[in-house]
Length: 397
Image (cartoon, rainbow, N blue to C red; front, side, top):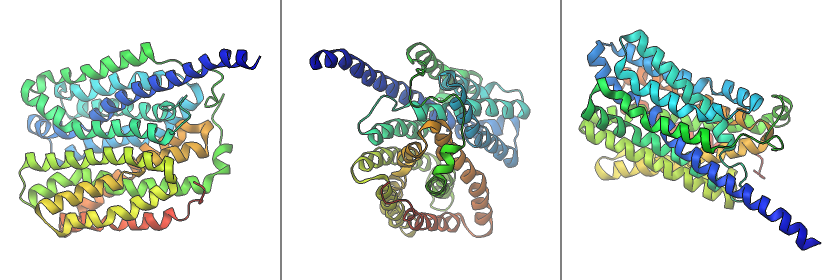
């Protein structure tokens, strides 16, 4: 009798695990291209400024519009995906982001540029909450490691995005920029045809959004949010200003400066994978503590030296800083598993967007009054604050 039961249940287990890894693969590929498109605006900016005669204020407004529509509104999509459970939130996203970001070269003026950026951001925002919640669904062992694969795919896409668009636009020109959308459309078709709908019996599926799961864990969840916010301050501000700093204050060429940025972001992708691997072995709380204090010496080395030691400091600092990308999200989902889409949006998009909206302009203001080296160097204080804050997390996390 026992062997009969095992024979009946074993195929279901295998099928669920297989479906889980298929979903992880699809979501990881989609995440790569979603974040590739999210980093594409920077490559368009010089060409758009020249074509439309945009001021630096208008160029900044385009960046702000993208941060708003792609990040700050993610909790709304997390709520909707937790409420309605349709795979369209994530499946349509790569095509929407790809089409509207890639077609910026076909805009007729500043107004249409803003509209395209906002609509492209909608695709980016709608993808992240649901995809983050479902990326490791059906996978029961080493979720931290496998979720790190999903996160690192996105970080790698963000690192490659500027090179992808600059190389393509240099070859085909702004008037044919729509060609860059083709991978996003192909990925959407794959998600529509290969990604299953969320089953009714899934433990992640709720009939409605509920506040009760958050009330029970509000304290550790709040600490996690601020830890993500602190990490994002350094992460997104460096990504915005490092090429400018290296070019203006260190004398690097534009091409070399952007290549160093790509190395920094690629190291972050690797860091996310390493952090997820470590979290499965020593716990998320310890990984956060190590990440916050461990990145400070390397980031300080970046500002205190020049040449190869400085670049190595930046790369190693970025690697350690981004240990916590998958760790924070998984810990948040474990605190409120029935509202995993909303939690993912808070831990990723909303925290990232708030950090960017506040600290990118503030860093620019400080740089105008002192120097970019001073403004960026001051940001290394925040991981130290994160190190102290991480000790307030429950020891069992």
